[in-house]
Length: 215
Length: 302
Image (cartoon, rainbow over all chains, first blue to last red; front, side):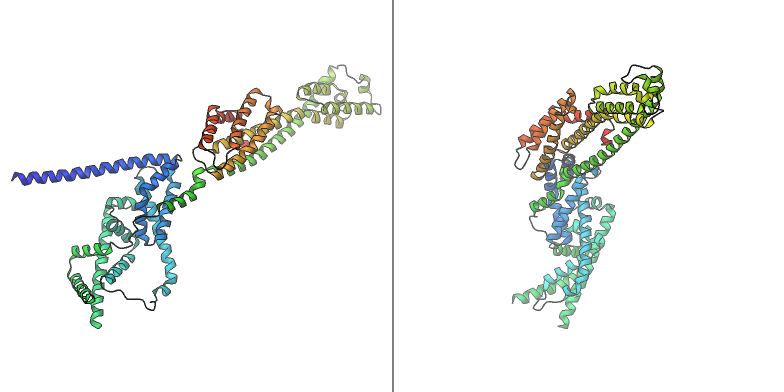
C-alpha cells in the first residue's frame, strides 16, 4: 500500500521540480532580456543584436505560420523588430520583452494578412481558375488541403490562437499576454477554432464520399 | 495496385472521421495541420538583420537628425540674436542721444577749455558755420581712429565740444555726433562675442553628436567635414580679439586639438582614433567648459 503512494509522491515532486526549474529558467531569461533592453536603449548595438538573436527564430516561425509566405514572414519579422527597437524606450518592463515583441509581431502579421486579403479579393477570379493539366489532389492530400483552407477561413482571433497553441506550442498564458486578452478568452477561442475544424473535417469527408458515390 | 490500397485507406479514414469522437478528431486535426504553413528550418537571420540595421541606422546613430535640427535651430537663433543686437544698438543710440541732450546744460554750466573759442558759441549766424563744420570733421576723424579704450575720451570731448553747446541752435549737427561715435567700439566687441558664442554652441552640438563607440564611414565623413569647418573658425577666432581672453583662448586651443582629430575621421579610421577623441573630450572636460562659456539663456537665443 505504501509503495504506490511513495511512487505517486515522488512523481508529483518530480513534476513540481520540473515546473519550478522551468519557471526559474524563464525568470533568468527575462532578467537577461531586461539587462539587454537597458543596454539596447542606451544605444549598445551588441545588445540589440543579442536581443534579435534570442527572439528572431520564434518570431519568424510565428510570422510564417500566420502568413504562410516566406517573403511576408520576412517582412513581418523585420518590421516587428524595427518597431520594437524604435519603441524600446517606451517599453516599461511590465511584461517580458519576448511577450511585448510577440505582440508587435502578431499585430504586424495581422495587418499584413488583412492587406493581402484585400489584394487577393481583387484578383480572386483569376486565381480560382483551374489551370489546364492541373491534377486534382487525392486522398489525404485532399483532406489536408481542405483543412488548411478551413484554418485560413477561421476568423483572425481563432486562427491566431490556434496557430500559437496547436502549431507553435505557446501556453494559454503566453497567448493571453501576447494578445492582451484573458486566459479564458484564449481557451474559448481555441475550443471554437477546433470545433470549426472538426466540422470542416466531417464536411469534407461527407463531400468526398458523396462525390465517389456519384462517380 | 498501390493506388487501390491508397483509395481503400482513404475510404477507411473517411469512415472513421464520420464515426470519430471529439478527442479523436482533435488528434486527426493536430496531425493533419502540423504541416500548415510549416516554416523552414532556418530563417534568413542575417539577411533580416541587415535590413533591420539599415532601416534603423539614422535612429541608432541619432547623428544626422540631430545635426540637421541643431544646425537649423542655430541658424534661426543666430538671425534672431542678430535682430536683438540690432534693436539694442538702436535703442543705445537713441538713449545716448537723449542723454547727450540732457547733459548739455550741465556741460555749459561748467565750461571747460575747448579748441573753439567761447565767443563762437555765443555768436549766431554765419560765423558759427565754419566752426561747426570743423568740429564735425575732427569728430569724424576721431571716430575713424576710435578704439574701445578711446571711446570714453571721445565721448567727453564730444560732450564738451561747442557742438553740444550749440545744440539748441543746430540740433542736426549735435544729434549726429553721439549716434556715430558711441556704439562703434561696443558693436565690435558684441560681434566677436556673438561669433564666439555661436561657435561654441556649434562645437558643443558637434561633440554631443559624436559617439565614439558607434561609427560608420558615412557618418564619420560628415563629422569630419563639420569638424573641418569648425576648425577653420576656431583658428580665426584664436587670431582675433576673441582669443585675447586667456580662459577663452585655452578653451579654443583645446577645442582646436579635438577638431583636428575629428577632421581626420574617415573610412577605416581605427577604433584607437575614436578612443583618443573621446579621451581628449573627456580629459579636457570640453563639453562642460563650452556650456559654461555660453551665458545662460544664450543657447536658446542662438
